Every structure is written in C-alpha cells, then in structure tokens.
Amino acid sequence: MSTGHRLCDLTTVSLNVNDPETNSHLDDPPKPQDQVNICGGSGQSLHTNGTVNGESSTKSLRKFEKSENHVGSAAASLSALGEAKLCPVHEGELQLYCSTEGRLACSKCVSDGSCQGHTVTDLVTRATVVRNQLVDVCEKMQLQALRIERFVDRTLTAREKAVQTDANSARERVLAQVNVVRDALEEEEQRLLEAIQREEERVEQCLLTQRAHWTHTLEKLTHTRTSLVHTLTHSTDTMILSSNEEINDRIEDAEGAGEPRDTEQLTLNRNCSDSKLMVGLWASALLLGSSAQRFTTLHFEAQTVSPLLSLSSDQCTLTFLPKRQRQSPLYDPSRFDSWPNALCSPPLSSGTHSWVLDVGMSAAFKVGVCYSSIERKGSGNAARLGYNKKSWVLSHYDEDLSFCHDGCNVGIKVAKKLKIVGLLLDWPSQTLLFYDPESMSVLHVVRHAFSEPLQAACAVADQSVSIVH
Image (cartoon, rainbow, N blue to C red):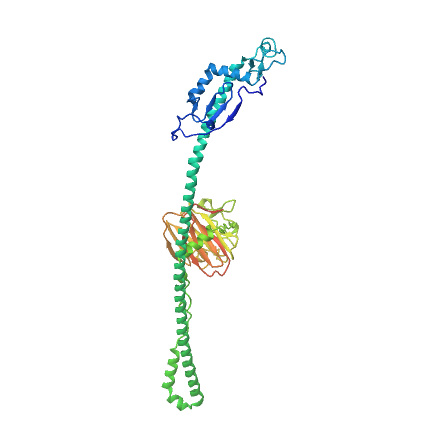
C-alpha cells in the first residue's frame, strides 16, 4: 500500500468541547454529535466529552495503543475496505512497512528486493503507531479547542465589557475636564472684560477731566492775554503804572496754570487683561495643541560670540572659557568684547516662534531676546543683557532666578533648578513668554510693543548652554 493511503481514515471530527470544571454532565454517555470517529474495522470512536467507549480519554487512548483488539480491528478494517494490495514487483501480499522508503513492502522486497537492509516493521504495528499518533493529535486539538473556547467565552467577553466601561469612563472624564476648563474660561473671560471695561472708563474719565480742566485754563489764558493786550495797546503810561498791581495779579494767575503733561493715567493699563489662567492655556495651545508651533531653528552667530566664550562646531553650544584658554579674536563690530554674550540667527520680526535651551550644566546664565541694535562694545550696561531697554532676559545666578529688563529684576520662584528653559515669542500679540518645558509651567510673561527685530540672546558665565533642536 503506498504512503498516500492512510491506515486509518479519519472520517468525522465533531467537537463539542465542555468545560471540565463547570460541566456537570461529564459522566453522561456520549452523544453521537459529541464523537470523533476514527474508523478502523471495529468502529471504535473517541468522544470529545472526555470518554473513549465509556472510559476516560487518557486511559482509553493508552489502552488503545496496547490492545490486541485494536490490532485485530486494524487488520479487519483493511480487509473490510478492500485496501489489501499485492506487491507490483513480487506480487506478494503487502504486509510490511519500510520506514526507510516510507512505503508498503512484501516479504520478498525485504529479503531480496529494494528494501533489503532497511528498517522494516509489521504493517499492523505501523498502523497502530499511526492510529495512536492520530489519537494524540486529536487530544491536543481537543485541549486547544477548550482553550480557544475559554478565551472566546471568558477573556474576549470580559474584554468587550471592560473596553465599553473604560471608554465610557474616558468620555466622561474628557467631558468633565472640558466642562471645568470651559466654565473657568467663561468666568475668566467675564472677569477680564469687566476689568478692561473699568479701566477704559477710568481712562475716559481722566481724559474728560483733563479736557475740561485744560479747556477752562485755555479760556482763562485767552481772556487774560486779551485783557493784557488791550491794556498794552489802549493805556497811557500813567494808566499802565497805576494799574501795575492788577497787571501783576493777572500775570501771576496765568503763570499758575502750569504745563499740560501726558501721564500713564491717560493710557490704558495693559496689565488689566493679565491672567495666569489665560496665558497658561494660550501657551499650552500654541505649544501642545493640534497645530502646535514647531521649534524655530536657531544657531549662534560666530561673529557675535564674546572672546570669553567658545562656540561648538554645530554653532549650538556656548562654553565659558577660563582665562588661560581665552584668545583674542579678530575685531568684528558685531562681537561683544566685554560681556560673555552671543546672539542667534535669524532675527525675528513676525509670526510665532519657540525655542528651548539646555541650561542644566550652568550655574550662571542669561537667556532671552534683544534688539539687533544693542551695543556690542564696552563693559557698560548698554551692552549688558537685562540692564538696558533693548534686552529682556531670564537670569540665573547664585541659585536665584529672575527676569531682567532695563536694570529692573523680578524674582521668580521655582521648586527646583531648571534643566531646560523654553521661550515663546508671539509677534502679533507682542508677547514674550518664558516657561519650563518639563512641567509646562509659565515662568514669566512680557508684553511690550517691540519696535525692532529681535534676536535670541544668551550669556554664559559658568560651564555651557546649548540650543535644543
């Protein structure tokens, strides 16, 4: 018989897998639909409910391998199915199996033919081995089916319920957070609009008062001037001298009117619209929102770098140099010659820009922006970042953090030393914001009517500071 013919024809595999831990009918007789029929002359069958011909599957399957009845049934099945064939070479009955060539053989094939010296076993013995292998496969399939059924019935069902619960919770959480933010925004919007309205009314009242005062003063001055001109042109010398006291009183009254001055009281206080909540949300939207602003690509301009500093080859890192390592570079009108400063390119005069600097290694640094027209030479405040009207910087020195502009310092408290500092420049709103990228907390906000292009600026007096790309 060729290797293409099976010794046992597995004709029906019908699995009805039960959970051995929960099914109370494991001892019931097997039903026809619960059987795996392995055809062999006697028609014995393997039941997937855990029994083989009324016995436990494991015991029956092991007995099946050793049982003489099974060997007899195998031979009977071959006869019944008409599978006994003759050797095409020797015309002898094929009762042996050549494991070397994987085919059936007759006794002459083994003694004198092509299978001489090969590993040969009895046909029935080989059929029994194949049957037992099939039984093992069916056992594995049964256990695999049980695991799959458990996975489908228990795990997947539980996961479906869990994902629905988790999704509903996530939706509720998002809606709750959005509602809180929306309510807070509406309240803050109302508060700020009222504050702006009050400030506008205050300024308008001041303007009205000033207008009334100076209009009345102007009328008095005009009247006094007209009177004096009339006296001057229509009075004799005697009359002028006799009315000298009256003339002096009018002059003194006119001089007491004073000079009009434009003061801060006559302009809207821009701080009336300040709000930490609004600034934080605005910055977060620009930095983290769906249309988040990408970092602006900056690099230090080599011609501006102070001789107190060294610039890395990628033009992104400034390092403070000890005295013995300093050199005198060629003169350049753009270079800071006394303060350890450097400026970045390109200049910024429109749009929204953000960049981050690594300051973790330095104990003394300044980061910020300045006008391109800032003084570069000398050791005076005109070239010192944060000590003139042309620069706005965040300064860290001796463990103190502060904002510096025009010589005025505003202290900033932080929970820990900053490792990186972020800057956000929004030219349309004329806003400069310093923030901590790690905690996304706002450190300081500047609102100023910038009148010139700005350049990112940096000063280093300890270790190094780098632009983070």
